[in-house]
Amino acid sequence: MNEPTEPSATYIPPPPSLPVMQATASAPIIVVKEEVPKVEAKREEPTEEISPEAALNEWIISVLKDAISYPTRKHGWAILIPGAVLTIAMPIVGLLPILGPIIFLGIFGFWAAYYLDIIGTSTNGDRALPDWPVITNMAEDIFWPALKVIGVCFISFAPSILYSLIQGKVASDGVIGSLFYLISAAYIPMACIALVMTDSLTSALPHRVIPAIKRCLPEYLVPVLVLISIKVVTVLVEGLSVLILPVLLSAILTSLITFYGLILQARITGLTCQRFRERIQWG
Image: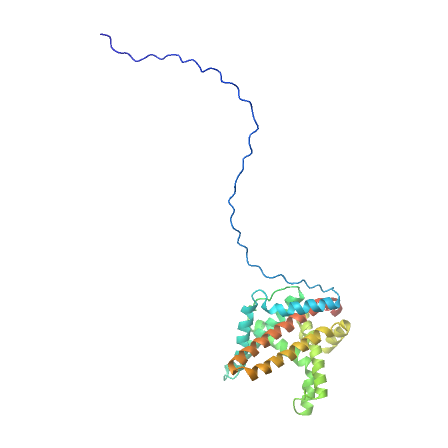
């Protein structure tokens, strides 16, 4: 009986030729992208650009709008609230024995450095509040700015001080005393500009400041009147707060308004310097 054998390989013919398919244009491939919801970053409200070369009326309106919003722009409240706290602390720490006057001068110097920094950054065209001053050397970063601001204030208000000494009392309530005070109020913005632009206290002396004021007249009177108005409004609000609010709330509100007013004054002074830089001729 024959053994079963494996089936032998057989030849399988190729399949019949298939009909040739006509080439057709391939349909476009559509890629469906899943839309991801966009999260818009919180942006600050745009502020109006201030042109130093604008017409006087336009420039005044722009400066006023800018100055009002300037203290609260960007991280402004993080500056205003600590600034108000420091304002409240100044008269309190000044009463402490021995260290009190030193701490008082330190806070005042911190303020002075920040005030001058606002003028400088505003002159350069910065639109937001600068950060707090960085303290690396107490003598250079705190006490020297304090002495410079004290020196500028003394030079600016020398007529009022001398008149008061001659009268034997504070004589700013009289006609002549008020006139001297207005002269000093007109002098001090340009004196601060001189200090910031040259970093020299001698630049705040009358032989430099008075000619610069003359070169900027009559437009220079506008920011001077605005600064005086800010001072008047600040005093009025402080007086009303004392009458209608408890002592603590009145002190907090007064300190906040005082610091807010100082920032406004520094901002307007810096923008004034930006407009009149060529006429000032200090740099």
